[in-house]
Length: 239
Image 1 (tube, rainbow, N blue to C red):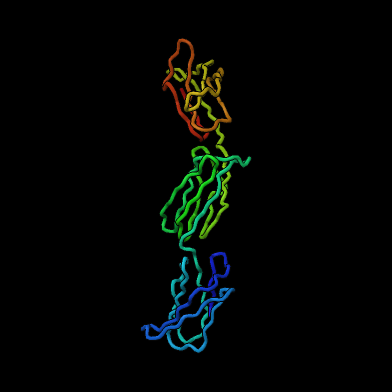
Image 2: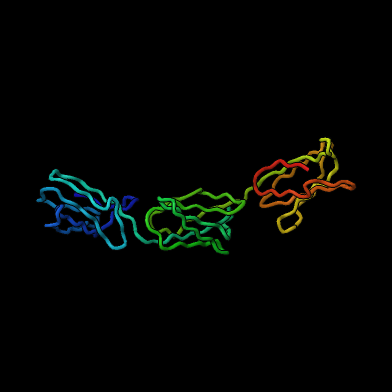
């Protein structure tokens, strides 16, 4: 006897269980019931049990038993299914262009992207996948999810990574330069903030997100490098 179940231990009914001798000279077929249970009595010798149902694959794909009574368990996975969901922030507002990556047990990856409303869909999946979400300067929860069948509501919640930049302004002898204007801009040159180095040449600015371009300026001084770019990790820089 035995059971046909999915990976969540739900019964898979109407699975054909093909019972055959090793040489194929005899075979019969029985079916699992609504509880996923199957049974065949009056058997003898070494026999192979093979489960089969359209749209499903089973692990193991077959079991061989001898005359000793055995209890078999076949776990089924839908061979082609679709997973869909959404990527949103903590206010449930959409996050667009998030890479949703499906990684199978062999490490093969399939990637799709969320649309302007944060929705994504991936069809044609088969087997078990680890699903993760990624976008530059965002972290997502959960970090990943495992799927092995249809799912229409796999949601990833993202938050922008907030970081701090600090640094110093020094002359060629390593002495501090006070009163240097440190300008922070976005990648598209939108102004974020201006701050000034203190008497020790130090400066710091927090609550930054995304890619930031930083420049230093002071009358009668030239600074190297002309600019620095940071993008999401708290960083210490110098001019």
